[in-house]
Image 1 (cartoon, rainbow, N blue to C red):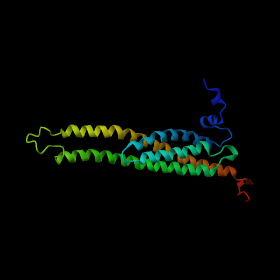
Image 2 (image 1 turned 90 degrees about the vertical axis):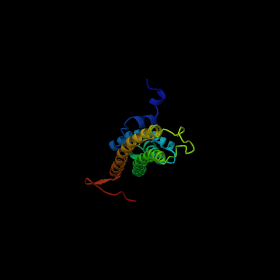
Image 3 (image 1 turned 180 degrees about the vertical axis):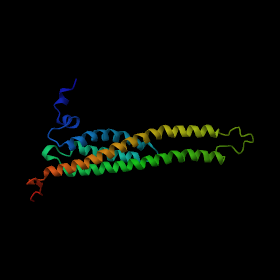
Image 4 (image 1 turned 30 degrees about the horizontal axis):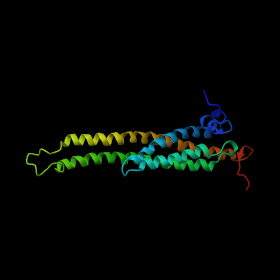
Length: 199
């Protein structure tokens, strides 16, 4: 059963249902912005990857852009085309950063695995003072453990970033469409032709 507080909350109504005072394009982009906000928060897990902060940065940009769409673009006649454009730019930037993050993370994973294999080939993990090599590390096992450990950390983040990229791209396009619709609505018409408002 829905909470009476939420039922009477303008913010809840605005975020979770279509506002009849808004243009369809505005309602559509607000709906997608909720998904961007959720994925943006999750993609901030990218900050956990040592030295590779791309996914986290994209998540921060996505959260800011989605928050602008949900809270700061106005409603009805007060809808702001500029806010939609600003949010669209932020979210498009987040999508670009997440695309870069996916490439960076895959390269990072491959480099770690290759580094372990190269060290094995160079005898880094063997004991030169032990003639029987009793202390030699099982390189195949070590490589497998390194690959699995990095994979468990990296690949879920990569999948999240790919999904976030797709949602952000859609949201950015919808943001620009909403801005265009708001601008068109704001223009008065003469004989059916939109004309600029006098300053």
